[in-house]
Structures are given as structure tokens and as C-alpha cells.
Image 1 (spheres, rainbow, N blue to C red):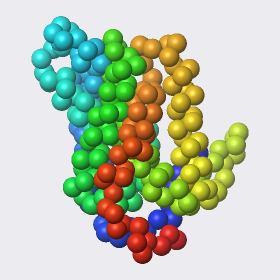
Image 2: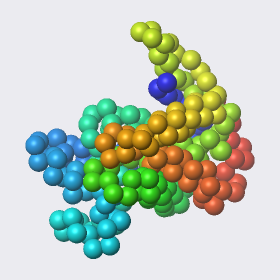
Image 3: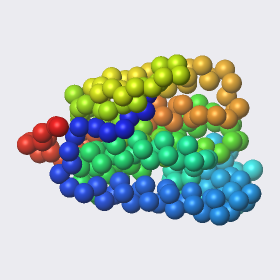
Length: 230
């Protein structure tokens, strides 16, 4: 399922959401400019779990403090589809979550859930040497928040059935529950093949859980008053 649009209007322009999308696009443009040097860029600014869990950073090359890579990795992507998929989710769901908090709270929420997502990945793969990159951990936090804020919202979704595709309007609760259940299943299966790369499923799960837990602390108490969904 690929979400395309939701039914929740925003009360204010989502300036932080747009800025975050813009930063990710600019960083990816720089990665393209680097060409083959892109691999060194990802190794430097991606999150390498073993650099965090090794107290002496024995295998760290000194270019970036490994704790800073928790945050830098949120703005680095491994390819076009990786970037486009993350930014699509960011735009559809992030603008409403930002609207519920205001710009400053949203920045803190985004970075905090992204950091907790990254640490969830490190906890399940502490000796990992493959860099983790992408905004999906922080975006997973946004999805968890959205689930509690707007479970009855309608999401226009592109559904693939074999070789066929169709559009359907589905309640947000089912779209997001399907998403997190799929991540839990894949994450559980991946436990037997840790260290082989691929998707950081537990970063998604950790970020989603963080969003669920933190939304009440960050949401403006008066936000839902007068909000009408299309």
C-alpha cells in the first residue's frame, strides 16, 4: 500500500516539514554530486552501531563523533526510491503532526523520535558495522503520533494486487496498523540474519513506539478544537 493523500486539513503552513524535506533533498543531491565518493559520505554520516557500542571507538575513523551520527544519519539516503518513499510519508503525515504541535515542538519531537529509533536499531544489532541511513526512524515516530491523533482520517491509498493496482480510501488506523504489523513481522524474521544489511526494521518499530508514547507530551491541548476532516 502506498498512501497518496489524507483528509486532514492543516491550520498553518507546515514550514518545518517543508524544511526537513528540503534538507533531505539537498543532501541527496550532494550525494549524487559525489558519485563514487558517496560511499565514503554514507560511511561517515550514517549510523554505524559498533561505533556507538565500542567505548573506545576502536574502528572509528575520527571524521565525526559517533553520537552525532545518530542525527546526521536522518538526513542521508541510499537511493532515489529510499528518498522518495520517506519524503512522501513525511509530507502526507508530517504536516498534520506539525500542525498539532507547532514548529518548535515538532522539531524536537522529530529529532527525539529519530534518535530513539536509531538507538532501537543499535540495541538489536550492537556489533553491526553497516551504516544505517534514512529519515524513516523519525518518520515512524510521526506515524505513531498520527495514529493516535487522527485514527478516523481517510487516506487515499494505492493498493497493488498482483500485477494490478487500484485506488482506495482507507481509514488511517488500518493503513498505519498494516504498516507497523508488517514491520514487526519483518523485524522478527530479520533477527536470524542480523548484520547482513537491508532495512532497519527495529528503527521503524522503535520510532513508531516513541511517537505513540510522546505525542501527548508534545501536542497542543487545544489543537483538536474546531478541526474538521474533509
